[in-house]
Image 1 (cartoon, rainbow, N blue to C red):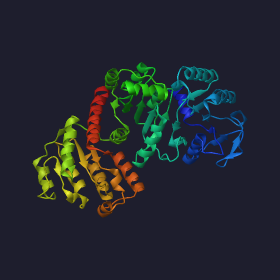
Image 2: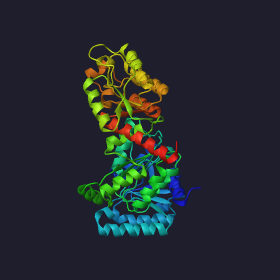
Image 3: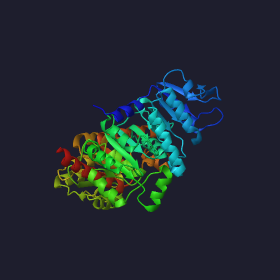
Length: 478
């Protein structure tokens, strides 16, 4: 049975009507951006534009106030000057609004006076039976219910949730990941988290049937004990990737001025995160790569890795990366080497691990899938990392067929910009459109083939996936 906070958040994620304030027909204000985001996502409920001085904004008739709206309003987006927010919250309470996203900034992150105003704001809302997301946040994104906070976000639903104290990072990740074929179930930007906070939404994601993988951007948190207790309870069933910032003195000062967050000792955080079974990432690029790895339906059974590459230098660098991440180069069987030697060139290549396919693999699109099938069938191999200079359609399709047979993790390192780049060299070797690339990548992720920008990222992702697999087995016994 769902508890009250989970039920409340579930209702917020499924509004029947939304009112957006701070819109204007005279200029492209932030309220317009948020209103257009709902229109772009195709929100199916009633959408209201609130402005007492305008007749219409973006084709939607303006209503002078929230209280003047004819009919119930479930969610209000507040994007006005911070001095006007308290009166607008009072208007929402009088209307019986269930929740408000306060996009406006200028509260706790600005100092003591802003903090006092923020506390009074939350007090008023709670006494009036209304919940607040923010202030200083972007709000909610959910393809299934038509919620969005930025135009161009993917309309297709995924299985990964992103819970963030930064709104701009949620935008960046949503759009950039969408181009890479990654899809999300929910995105939540909590900002200052004055009312509903990171812990409340984390508890909601625990029971959210649409979410199988949870990702976090965390600057600091008020109730660290509750956070770690929740994380330890959730992580054996749903992996949690965490990008924790504010680890240095400069970072902690930046966090305080950004969302008013308080960060604790880095060493304490590291130990606590490991104990709770969370997986740490270091940056936005790494977060995207880890998301693709942790969608893998075929968890690794050991740390023995086979490396496939065309360029020889990258193969050596990949071996270094795997060793540094705690992985071990697999000893390929004699049978595997014999099979590889049937099509791998005798000169300028190698059938030892790392397997050097030579430049021939850039022309013969069947070499990578064939070599992957041989290494994947080898009992000495637990996982595969391969560097592919240009991800051709034929190579991707071949790897998908191979993955279905070997059922072992495959991590592909490739500069994605080359796949659809219109240069003479790219055209010579063959490229695909950006739209087709996104669709192919999504199929690869769903099948268990992750794609990474660097060999270091790929090795670290596979190592982390193996550590999580062992952690999960120790907690659940399976």
